[in-house]
Amino acid sequence: MLELKKLTKTYRTGDRALHEVDLIVPNGQVMALIGPSGAGKSTLIRCINRLVEPTSGSVILDGTDITALGSTGLRKMRRKMGMIFQEYALVERLTVMENVLSGRLGYVGFWRSFLRKFPQSDVDEAFRLLDRVGLLAMADKRADELSGGQRQRVGIARALIQNPRLLLVDEPTASLDPKTSRQIMRLICELCAERDLAAVINIHDVALAQMFVERIVGLKAGELAFDGKPTEMGEDVLTRIYGEEDWQATIRKVDEEEVEAEVAAQ
Image (cartoon, rainbow, N blue to C red):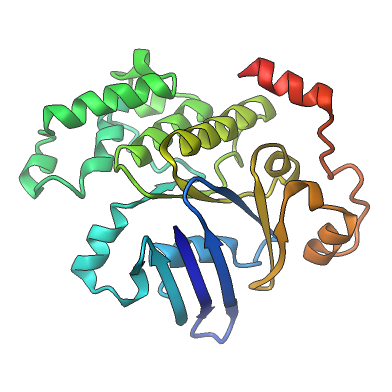
């Protein structure tokens, strides 16, 4: 379980990115984080794994206060937090398999990682994950030969090979076409359910979030503006988060036929 207690981030310039954010994300729950640009979504994700240092407050994962850890403890704790990036963050000249195995760097010694000598158990798990994300046949391809959707699948496999307890996902569909975006969101949600993983997904596409996640949290100016179910996302909520606009075209109304179509596509 992930718990944020009065999480606050104020930069040296005086700009406040987050203000006393309180959240609990139980195991197995996929939570979408929405809000306008500059609302603090990416800062919140990076404060959780301390890529950005919080100014105050606590981040607690499975009972451990991450904000209180020293460098050694933080390195070990980051193994439990898989990160999936908008721009994939793959090493272009390496193969798909090598990129996936890079998720094990926190577990192997320096020389084994430098020489890319991973234990057979790690290699076997990488093959299993590539099969699960639909890329087994591309294990030996270089990353720069892949499409955007394929690269994101590699990023997902790399995060999962850490055997994390939490996924932090930053705009996973921003560079993808609508069909691939649905496939990636569906895959993330399925994997979290299979592994009882909590996930926090920073996403701009409100309709896509409504389609796949069970909980949506809205940020505005670093503060919570909404926390509820996708079905509760009405025009008033979107106006509260983003401001005045005609939101009818944005609100996702999933009827029974659309649900059946989504199930059939899986």
